[in-house]
Length: 199
Figure 1 (spheres, rainbow, N blue to C red):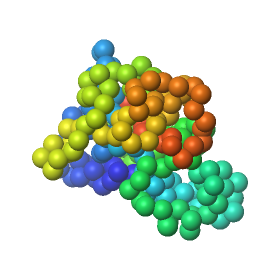
Figure 2 (figure 1 turned 90 degrees about the vertical axis):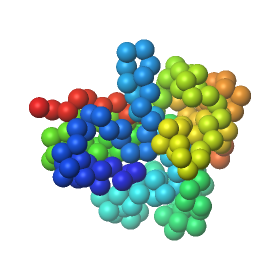
Figure 3 (figure 1 turned 180 degrees about the vertical axis):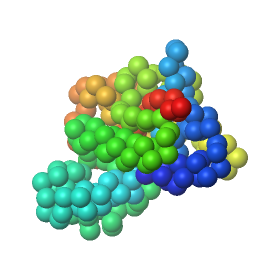
Figure 4 (figure 1 turned 120 degrees about the vertical axis):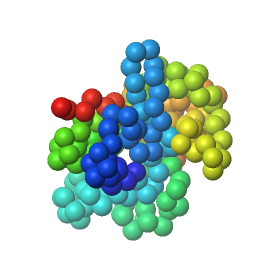
C-alpha cells in the first residue's frame, strides 16, 4: 500500500502535521479550489498482489471475492507472481478498479482511526481531473533521482488509463469510450482526497 501504514506511524512518533504530508506515492495537485493527490505511477502488479493477498486472507482461497479480483486471463495468485511486479496492472475492469480504491481507502482509514488523522478517500480520476493534471504536468514526465517526488509519470506514455466515467485516457491525450475494458493495454491510477486532521 505504498508504505502508507509505516508513514502514519512515523508521523505519530515524530509529531509531524499529517495535513502537510502527501499520501505516499502521490503528488499534490490543486484544481480550482480543490486539492487532490494523484498517484505518481499507475497501480502496478505488486500493488495488486497485495490486494489479492488481503482478499485471500480475508475470504479464503477459492472464494468468490478472491476469484472476482483476478485480472482478465489470470486465474491464480501463482500466475500473478510470475509477472513483472513493477509493470502496470492491466486486464482490470472498471468495477475491479473501484473495488481496489475502496479497499485502499478502508485500509488507510483503519490506520488513521488509531492515530486521529483525517480520512483519506481513494477513487479513479475523472476526465476533467486527468485533463488538468496533464495541463499542469505535461504528458511525458521523465524521472531523475533528484526530482522523483515532484513528478507524475506514465501519463500518455505507458498504458492507457481508466477514468471514473469508464472512458480511457489514450496516449494521444484523447478520451475514448470505444476502448475495450478489460484490456492488456489499459491500467489505472488512483487519486485521493484528504480530510483535515481531526482535532
